[in-house]
Image 1 (cartoon, rainbow, N blue to C red):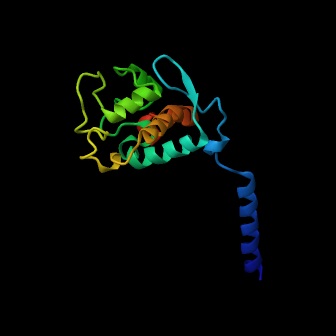
Image 2 (cartoon, one colour):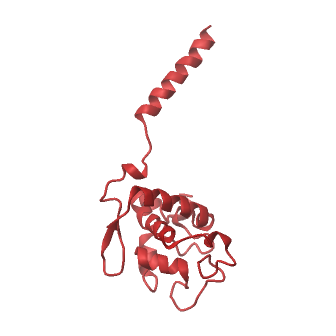
Image 3 (tube, rainbow, N blue to C red):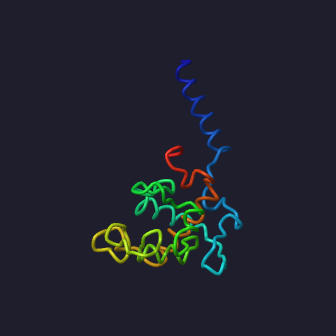
Length: 163
């Protein structure tokens, strides 16, 4: 009998715990956190909770294999952290430039196209996951890349010590 009631008690405690402890979701993020830079002139936009959720889901599905946690598995020297994005040529620290990169990727110095080795819209025939992505999808993915450092701080692009 004690065993029966102890299982019931554990279920009750677990239920109470779940009521009071919740994880952060896109809806929980305030507007200041969801505000990201749109273009090189510095104009900003507030991502909707739907864009935040969609961007995370699409990033994990299409980019997550190589860019888990904002790192680049094929080249650990270049990550998706704000500093690395701002030092690229052209700068990739805004949504418009990230969308441009996802359409036509170039080397970090911007001199050569890497569309044949990096998934992109230009090389969608080689990378099937890129075929169905719309501009809105790319915008959401770029928003996720810009937003993630604010949520997970130094872990985003932090490399092996975190992932």
